[in-house]
Amino acid sequence: MLKHLHISNFAIVPSLELDFLPGFTAVTGETGAGKSILIDALGLLLGERSDANWVRPGEERAELTAEFDIGGNVAAQAWLTDADLEAGERCLLRRTINNSGRSRAFINGSPVTVAQLQTLGGLLVEIHGQNEHLQLTSAAALFRLLDDSGDYRDELDAVGKRHAEWKAAQDELDTLEGQTAVPAAELEFLKFQLDELGQFDLGTEAIAELQTEHERLAAGDALLDAVSDSMERLDPESGGDADGVHGGLNQVLAKLRSFEHLDKDIAASCQMLAEASVNTIEAVTALRAARERIDIDPARFAAVDDSLARLSGLARKHGVAMESLAAVRDALAARVEAAGSAAERRDELQARTKALLDNYRRAARALHDKRSAHAHKLAQRVTRLLSDLGMAGGRFELEVSHDAQRAPGRRGDDRLQVLVSANPGLPPGPLAKIASGGELSRVSLAIKAAASGRHEAMTQVFDEVDAGIGGDTANTVGRLLQRLAGSGQALCVTHLAQVAVCATHQLQVSKAAGADSTRVETRLLGAEERVDEVARMLSGRLSEQSRAHARELLQASGPA
Image (cartoon, rainbow, N blue to C red; front, top):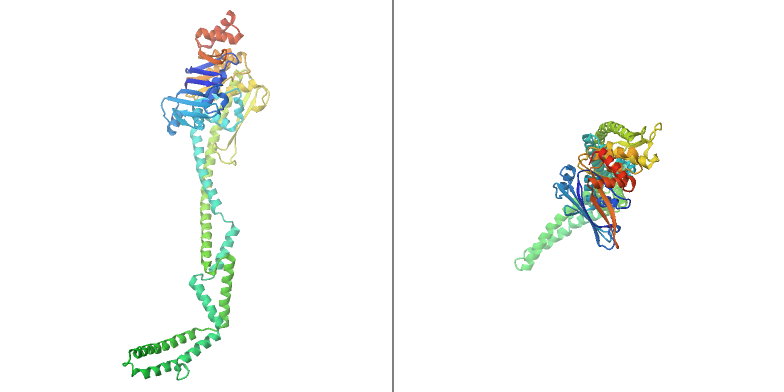
């Protein structure tokens, strides 16, 4: 709960120190005295948007500080621990705003973002304003109001967990489909291209051999004639002249053999001629083997020519050299394989996602059953409170509809709608169509009162939620606020004496105007001072009659 508030150079406040006590504190004072400034300062400390207009004119910056006792606030302590901020029984919020509009935020002396300040602030204080009923048109606010007061935390946690599991699988599936998805028609085309290339041996050596064979076949008879003629010229035994190259070499060698011992060069020549003779015979043998391989079959030539033409066409089709077709084939095979693997993985993920969605739907249905039952009970309590608040015959309904076809969400598959009838005999309708602002405020207060009881560790602030009411209804509002404070803490800015007398404590706000400046002053009223303040609130002036009436109200309300 809130223990202390320090304000410096904020709006028209040069400096202000305020201590707060447990229980219900009424904040009262003349219209325009500056009561709302306290609420504004607290709102900024809880993360509301700031601007330079909050800085007192002529000053460099405004400074706001609030101290909270969080000994009983488990949620706030856990948040501080998770955020690696000092977590004890005291929590200090601080915010500065300079005259250029820039602000800085601190928690327990450590700089933090405004978002962090806002998150922690939501665990420390609830601020309810005159227009809080407008929040009831927000789905998030409706769910928060209903679920925070319900006793189905296990079901809420289960839905949140199942939703997170489903979403993780769905995100993985979406990513997979976005990265590797290949349309069926494109996949068929890839397979067709792969089959085309698969009809050939695309190895570099294989293509080179095919090209060589094509050239050999193209040479045909001319090649055969050249080989045969060369054999005949080299070796007479192959059908040529007796004095062929081989025979001529042997004749020369025979003449020189008898003289090789006389001259080393003759000896060398004999050696070379002998080798040449041997090489000539080997050359003839090789040519004979080549001649046996020469094929002048036109059908084979046509087949080889067709293969090369098709390979050349594929190379043009894929925009590469013929020697690079193997790389194209490998790339296509990899894509087809990846598409197949992706399809298999996609099937697995689709099955898993469906199973997780089914788990989520079952959890959401279980939550709906608990939530719907609680909504009915809550609506009954609100309806009873509306009667106490001067709206006898009024009805409040909180419709919880279940839609198992909607997109999964962390709160389940439910939709909420508030329906209200302010007068007997009229069917409930949308909250926004209620004409009276006072009725709207009372509906909002009744909902808050009916849903209370789970946040005693929090400070609740009511900013003129009693606007537009009076008489005995005002007495009921005061008692409701007293009940809402419970063993915790509630602050209410009010102009109604009937509400103020129900408070445990009363804080008076006044404005003091000097020659050159205006300042806001506050003080916690004692028993007799409360009598005078309540008397002023009742009649606008002090008299023995108004004081007597004030004493009567204070005694009847309970607190001294």
